Image (cartoon, rainbow, N blue to C red; front, side):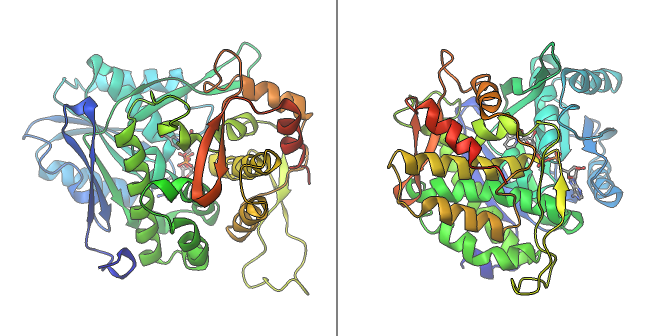
Length: 410
Ligand SMILES: NC(=O)c1ccc[n+]([C@@H]2O[C@H](COP(=O)([O-])OP(=O)(O)OC[C@H]3O[C@@H](n4cnc5c(N)ncnc54)[C@H](O)[C@@H]3O)[C@@H](O)[C@H]2O)c1
């Protein structure tokens, strides 16, 4: 049965085989109403669980998870974090580790991350380091975390330079989850902006999906945008399953991102991200927001309201995809129409394509050189090429990168 016609409450199970867990498969479950069973068969009566969650997750969903754990006779404690990039920090890691000590978690016990990508990253890192590693169950609560952050075992925190600039994901560990539980009911409370933000990572997957068993993902995603933005549960469930499969396939082939650049491997998942990380925390940015619903007609529609920064991670990724497509076109690596196709897809998804208040392009380039993907100070960029594939390039002329940054100016 094709995913879009599957009943919404039948869970989809995807297995991700990872070397890190001695060939054991990490099961990724997708469906509605799964939170209550998140840790079934993972706990013996009397074991301890620390739930790490965020302020945005509805209390009723947290309660569902905890009820399910109590049914298993687990001892449960929770810690709630306000999820910001500043709070994705060593300080928060310490708070979680302290809470784990306080709750007397042992090696066989469990940390459960219930939140967006910030929670999945920092709680995953806490699980990787507490007593040299305890199991983690990822329960992503944003679209972005469902299709990307919760899958693949990358965990970490941001570091801060002495000047106060954030360096994204600079400390971390690979730590594969024991299970990923994607309860799509969590999307019901997600804001439109956060839903759109998750769509940016889906567009990224679609742009590399040609060699990953889902050649039609780019066209399907574009054709489904209307339903997805209307929170259609079947379309969202199909989107999540297709994106998780693409990500799982990349991770299974190159779990620790060790493939040489010419092979691409897991590095391809960083399409748009070197640009994104450089602008994600730039202060003072603003951009035209999406048109108000029902005002799609260009004839009488008022100008969209300006949205003021900071950008969400997904918004920055969308802009990164656009810059990468423009760069690829300038280097004659893709069809000439690709940048316009990417810009149109972002516009239709209600994501920014242009910015006010952008600093000098050389300042952004300088931030890009700090990205951990840089090798020997040289930029390493992922560029989309023909037929929804991407390549890793280390020879991109600086003037073209500066031009791609300047092309964001509104
Ligand atoms: N580890 C990886 O492989 C990976 C991949 C992609 C992104 N990331 C990281 O993920 C982070 C971004 O994640 P994000 O976009 O989920 O942001 P986020 O974690 O900041 O969550 C976004 C907002 O949604 C709210 N929220 C969460 N769940 C909700 C729900 N069910 N209903 C209502 N509101 C809810 C949160 O409170 C927050 O305000 C970045 O730090 C990025 O670096 C990691």
